Length: 332
Image (cartoon, rainbow, N blue to C red; front, side):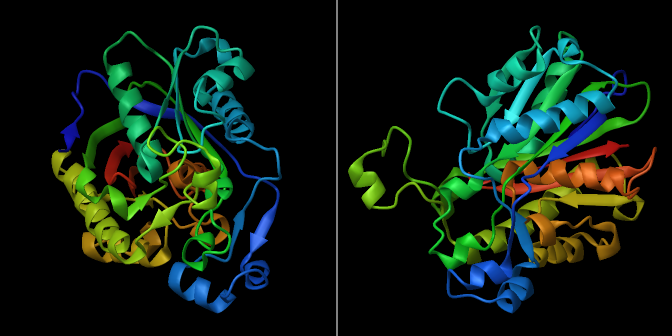
C-alpha cells in the first residue's frame, strides 16, 4: 500500500556514496569457464561486466567506504549519526550485524545499528524504514547502506545465475529537510513465492555441514522465468502506486531508478508505466545485479552524472526474493 508523506514534516536524502571492487569480470572471461557467450549474456540481460571482490574481502569492506563518502557529501561526521541500517543478504557473519561493524569503523558511537534482509529490495526497504524512524522525531540523521558480496554465494558452474550477479555497495544519508524529500512510499511481500529465488543453506533449516556443502545448498537458486514476470508487474504496479498516492503523473518523473537486474525487465517496466527509456537510469551493463546495493549505486551515479537535479521528481523501485517489492517517490 502506497503511503503519502505528511506535509508537516519532510525527510530527504542529503548525501550519497558508493564503492565497488576494482576487479572486473567480463563476459569474455565467463566464456572460458562456463558454456555461454558474450552475445547471449548481453542480448538477454544487458550485462557486459560485473565487479567481483578479491578473496578475503567482506561486505563491510565495501560498505564502509561507501558510507564514508555519503556521510562526507552530507557535510557530516560519523559521530553525528543516530541510526545505521545495512541492507544485505550477504553479511560479514550471522552476528553481530554488519551495521555494527560499519559503526565501529565510522566512530558513530551514538548510532543505533541493525541489518535488514529484503534481498534486492533491501535498499528501498531500508530507506522506508529509516524514513519512519526519522518521522518519529527521536532520530535526526540516518545512514542507509545497501551492500553485497554475492560472488561468494554464486555457483560459478551454473550459467543461468553466474552471469547475472556482482558485488558492490551504495549508501545515503537521510535527514529532515525544509523542502522536497520523500513524497510517498510503497512496500509489498508475497511469501507464497519464496521458492522462486532463495539460498537454502546456511540458516537453521540447513546449517553448514559436510552434507549441505556436498548438496550445494549454499548457492543461490532461481526460477528466472517466473521472477522476470513477477518483477515486471511488481515494480510497475509499485511505481504507479506511489505516483497515485502523491497525486503525480508518470510524465512528471524526471528519472526512474529501477533495481538493476536485467535490461529486459527495465524495458518492460518502462513500457508498462508509460515512461520513455531515456528516463530510466541504467548501469546494469557495468555492474550486473548487485542486489541490495543496486538502487543506491544507481542513485549515486545518477546524481554524479547530472541525471537528477534539485527539484526533480525521482522514483526508486525494486523487486527481490521473498518475494518483496517497493518504491520511494521523492523530490530531489
